[in-house]
Image (cartoon, rainbow, N blue to C red):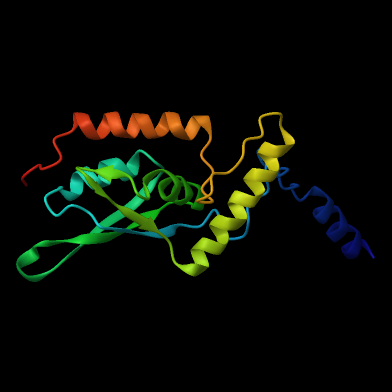
Length: 171
């Protein structure tokens, strides 16, 4: 009897784990996979633009984990590469802002694979629901990419950024 009683007391004295911190409020529930790193294909790059410049440009859009330009024989950089963003929102910003972005007179191509695109579409839908719920509704241009005034502002910042860096940086 006494033994069981001592055990019960010992259990009662066990420290209770601290309460888990409350998650930060998120305005919109992110789709599955949106918080995971995402690869984005970057193509049609002008060959004389140094990859550190491409990387600097990509970093303007979101958290870049890794930028890898594909190289051919003799380490000659090719016109495309892959960028790994820390989350889908950075990838989405890059696709929206940089696809067809004019880099030294050449429109670069930025796109994701089908699996990633599904996540981005989900993200856009959620974001649309969010913006249409607010007062500022704007119509999406025919291309399907919906640029907000904030996006336009980012774009002009990117253009300024590109014009200020020497793109044909030699290693």
